[in-house]
Length: 249
Ligand code: HEC
Ligand code: HEC
Image (cartoon, rainbow, N blue to C red; front, side, top):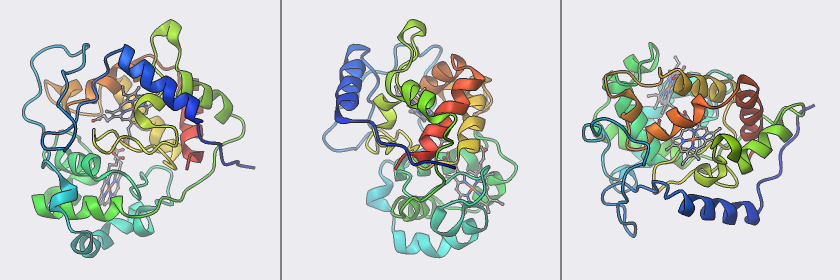
């Protein structure tokens, strides 16, 4: 018996803002995003900075959801009708923010995020196709599975509060009280995401395999954040928090 989980309250959002400010988190916006000055990079960043991020500045400005719809039909076989995946290993794309989607499609196409399925799927896409697909999927309404009742409460605690003793921040700070992410900064939405997929990505960040290349942890302007956080999570915490976000709407 699955259960939809209550969203984090306004108090948690406030708390997370305070936390983010205190930790001087990298609320880095993409160049050209109006209203937000680019901030300094994460304090944890090491080594040389990543090469210019493989993103077009603003898929919301460049993309056409209508043009994306015609290209998206081929994606539905795995990612589900309108991007609501029916299979636990295929991520939900519906409602994901377009900046993040475009970035990930570039990373697959460039072979930095290596996946035997997605690399051929993106090989023939132009930059314009990527922007069109990104805004198409961003405009769809996420539906999805519910949270597993055995795990979501522990997952909720971690999502909202993290674990200060180990320096693990609450996920809410960046992924938001209802899991919508942060579109301006390109932080992905986690709401309604398939829990099996979420666990697999947390494992990939933790073991360093999400991106390839000598500068893998800095493959995107903010990816180092997740490499650092996921390393600290136990397998049980990954399972619990994945269950919680699957039920978030
Ligand atoms: C044959 C199955 C299949 C098809 C068809 C497919 N995908 Fe995927 N897609 C996957 C799998 C599997 C993953 C997860 C890869 C991983 O685990 O890293 C994925 C991941 C993604 C991601 C990353 C999502 C995230 O949250 O990071 C995006 C974006 C994406 N696909 C977009 C597309 C688009 C756009 C199309 C159509 C042009 C498409 N996919 C077609 C199987 C497929
Ligand atoms: C300081 C901001 C921040 C915090 C806190 C944070 N994340 Fe993230 N998260 C990000 C960013 C940025 C990305 C995209 C990274 C990239 O480019 O690969 C991301 C990506 C992810 C992804 C991959 C999504 C996908 O579709 O593939 C998962 C899963 C995730 N985070 C889970 C978590 C969980 C669980 C927590 C709490 C334990 C958490 N995050 C805390 C910023 C954050």
